[in-house]
Amino acid sequence: MQDIIVLSDQILVYVNSIVFWVCAIVFWAKSKKSELKSQKRFFIGISFFFIFWGIMRIMFIFSNYYYEIDLSLYSFYWKIASTIGIGGLLSILIVLEIYMVKSKFIFSIITFIGLLLAIILPINGTEISGARLATYIFLPTGALSILGLYIYLYIKLSGRARHETGIIAWGLTLIFLGYTLTIELIKHIFNTELISPIASVVMICGALLYTTMYYFKKA
Image (tube, rainbow, N blue to C red; front, side, top):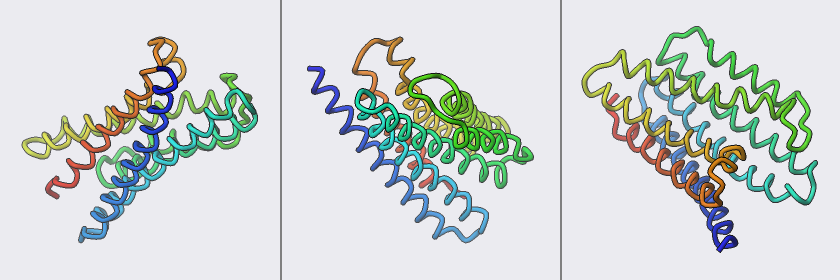
């Protein structure tokens, strides 16, 4: 039974990545159809987020494979996955703070600092220090910053635009919630192998909700 769960988890991670890349293509296509330069760049920023997070999911699979075989390779792939993940968050934050919310790049700067620390600092296996500690701090900080900006927009807007922004925020919430479920600490709390496949399903649902809403969203 456990082998089936592990296999289904790995399959769902790859499906998750493919869905993210399809979402990236949708946003890239939407940027090509947009007449305004600001909209083009905004959708390209979101497209890069999905590209990066699709890669991140695959890199974590590689990392987990080497967990009990070679800690140096485990750390190497874990670091790549984490830095790419933070980079994906930064790609959304930058376009949000340029084109949607004038917050003087406060959140982008904080996340960029986290990205630099995750790249520069060393990582020692599963020890919570260095790059791993930076990732544990700045990846959720970046995610919460993005959600915070969307919630701010939701409060400021009204009518149809507010409704659409609320659904978009829910989509992102599911993506970040799904990622949270992949963290080792959360797995230990729930103490079940089923949490990993569920995490991928939640992230897929969030990505589809977020992308579908933007696809049909009126400018």
